[in-house]
Image (cartoon, rainbow, N blue to C red; front, side, top):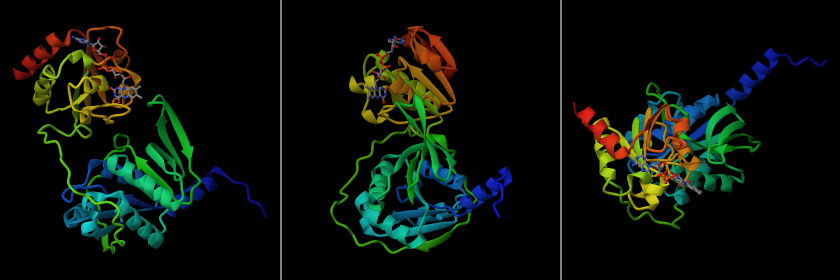
Length: 332
Ligand SMILES: Cc1cc2nc3c(=O)[nH]c(=O)nc-3n(C[C@H](O)[C@H](O)[C@H](O)COP(=O)(O)OP(=O)(O)OC[C@H]3O[C@@H](n4cnc5c(N)ncnc54)[C@H](O)[C@@H]3O)c2cc1C
């Protein structure tokens, strides 16, 4: 006998579907701490329902594995330690993920949409012969995700029919998972080294200011600053506010600042509590990287500058007058 499908039946069905999900989050870390985007990926994974496991691979990552096991929502931590995971090369991590997938049959595999995740997950997806979904900003259901297109000007809702859903998570769209979990930990044997690439060294920029993508306040400068020397104004302002300093692509292309400071479609995506745009016109490619900031302040001498359309507070002024005044006020 056929039964009518009621709303309550549908709810029960979707609850059951969610319960059978099992997600693997690939953790990004530096053998000392987890990256904030990994915590955001765990929050996203928790929204799928079902069980969340994390895979952590490294050379000496016991301390981070311990941190991971205390993250809310994580049920199981898979730990793989081997010299071959130095530098977290995707060539070496992929066989490890595939072996875990074979063993546990996850329905979803994800990581943060950082350089690490963007480098790794397409390779994993290709080996699993599934299409990956990149940089998701929302989860509608276990097979339906939202991501931005056209430099953030449109949202695309994607239904994924692949047997395993492989995706990266935009960190600014999901709150980082909090402490408060008590996951079990399991050592997994490392896969046979592939040996086609070798990690030699990395040179990290030393910076006393907060990291751009996780700072609560970001002060960004554009072509309006006119020179590398004038960026000192923004560094002084940032130091008063304990802020990170970002830049538009025009400022990077003009050589005022290095390209790791670029915010936007082809730069970093930030969503701080406060974003102060100084001498930036507000091109869509720049907005794509900062328009989710909680409060946006714009300083621009052109009252028609598009940045004022997204700004919560706008100051039509010459930045060379306004910024020193702000610094003086903050000194008092
Ligand atoms: C494929 C593609 C990807 C891109 N990706 C990015 C990206 O990731 N990030 C990004 O930022 N851009 C990106 N761009 C470039 C983008 O289109 C703009 O060219 C760029 O953002 C402009 O930077 P700007 O606002 O600093 O410069 P401008 O557009 O030249 O604006 C300078 C602003 O400073 C103001 N100004 C000048 N002097 C003063 C003063 N004394 N006081 C106050 N205000 C002053 C002016 O009124 C003006 O509004 C991309 C472009 C393309 C095609």
